[in-house]
Image 1: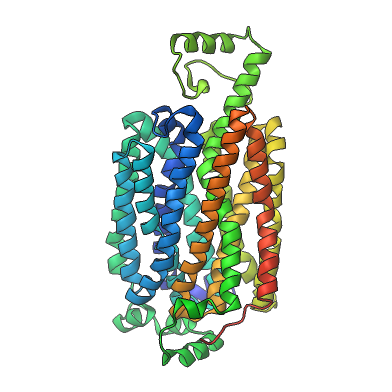
Image 2: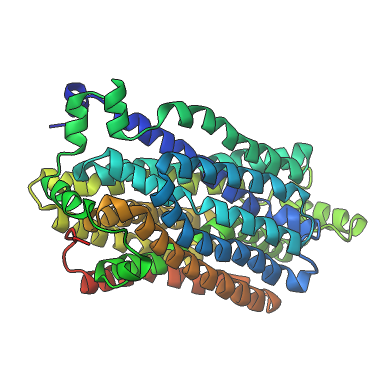
Length: 487
């Protein structure tokens, strides 16, 4: 039976809920992406200090976000499980919208670090709330697909950002880029409050059909587990940490979330650097070319210029690409990965494979695709668009992986602790993000000082390529079968 025919027979209100979560995730990543996109502009304005400290200071600002995000996730899941999805999600979005706007008032690394920390604490509420809402509104057979759909909002936010943020900054100043993207979040609340409620509340109000309600609650094993848990006391974090299932999710997030963070915060810088490298190589090889002469003439008149050499009027270098467009292309490819990642296990289940084997098989296949990024530096030397393609495949694989690893939580745990488990795993992912930001800052600054920053990126791409297959292996060792536990 196709998704369309199921919706026709029982209703589609649950997809409206998925649409709301998709919109919130889009806003979340729109706000999160602004810093990485404006890194060249902020660097030119001296926000990250002197040249010899810029990569380190930038990585420290990123780490401020990661520390706060990790701490926020530890508490956000527990708070959302306590106050409920509707209230918890709204509080989180209000908080991160104010924090996003606050960046406009920071003009130094330390003040940016403060606002990034504020953004991290508040944005931590998105995925625990989203994952809990999906578990409340979808049966197991549709959860990975629904998760893939809402998670694709991360890509849409990352597509919209490079197509708008640099131009807002160019036209009105970088401060307005933070203000306008922050304001967007408040519009979401006008839809969230009147449209969201639990399935039981929607059924009682007549806005959800009995057939769709029954379909949402059609997993017999899950309903039995929920009934077994309903009379029991609330579960502490310490109790949750005694389960191998918790540690499987923690390990998977710790090893793979940092890869996404690395691309999110360093991809614009990498592509901009590739452009600069090709410009310099061309100028050395063709010192009398008209483009070279124009740039040298401009630099002689503007010796402190620290911007993009390709944006000097009338200068066009071969092999140089629009990095803003390239970032958008990467996240367009990622959107396909997010949706496909949710579709694949559903396809395997519909083909007769049991849910556990379908999830494991899909995640193994997905874990192979990031290996393409091992070639990014080499093929990028031939043509930067080749590097963009390999990074796009790796990012698509991450989003496909993300759709499935989030769903493993509802595969293994009852609904009342889903936000808490998501928060614990998300915290582990953020700790990994802190480590990769520290490593990237140290390594890239080292190779930048040597004039070989491309080597630093090459090493980082090796880490990015191998992380998923290692994560899959460890998760399989810890939990050979994703089976629902009774707390």
